[in-house]
Length: 323
Image (tube, rainbow, N blue to C red; front, side, top):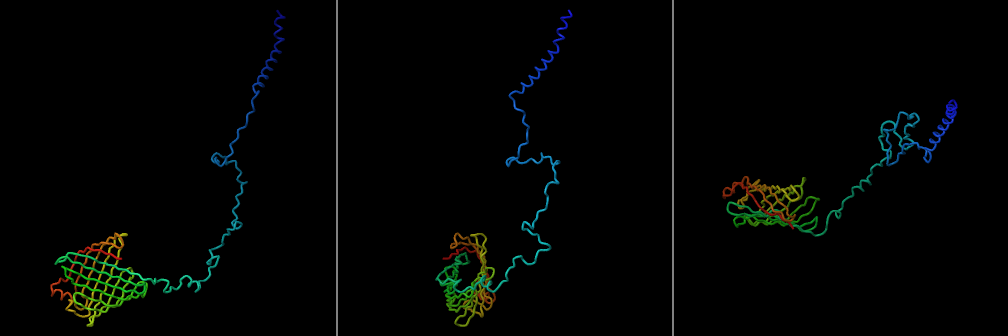
């Protein structure tokens, strides 16, 4: 019995050494055919992948090693001035000479701003009708010219008919000379057909007054020495590109009474009108308007004696055209 128990005791160390070697060999084979683990690294930022500053640990950065020197503006060509800005520019401006002024504002000669060609223009400012006390009435006012920009032959005409009878009509032929860019001096004759056949000498001015007022002032003298004057002012107010409001004021004066024509001395008559036209084209513009006419002084007295009203207000419908 002692021999059987001593045998396992002798083999026990050998069996322990064998088990340890098997464990070592198993660990070596477990790594066979595998690569050693690679250390993970942070990806390098690229243009498509911006740097995530919030994930950076700024507490470990050495700010003292960073270069925070101020920019040298003088080395960059940006010298900073000391004190206030200079009163004179760095590059001096040469003084203005008479030659510079002459080059900037050349003298305009006659041929530089006038056309020597022959042109013409005809305008009927008023072709209108209304209902009068004794029937329908019709009035016209027109003017035109032919010539150059400086020298022109003008005509003017106006008149009024009521109940198939002509109450007033006249025609003027005038020579006009442009004295400024906006004004002409005119002189010629006026033939009056109604109410009395008279011939008048005429002289006056016409043109565009300041603030765009069309102005016409004419003095008339007949063969008997009677003197009369007419002043007409009108304005065009553009409400839209086609809708135009045209106020007009016309006054007549006489130096002495003319019973045959029903005209008294002083301010004889005045007319104020307001016409609203629509320009289908610039040459064709129908209108509606309101006109008021009044006689004064001796003219009003002569009118009452012949049964004429002192004042007259009427609605008118008409056409303005030119060619």
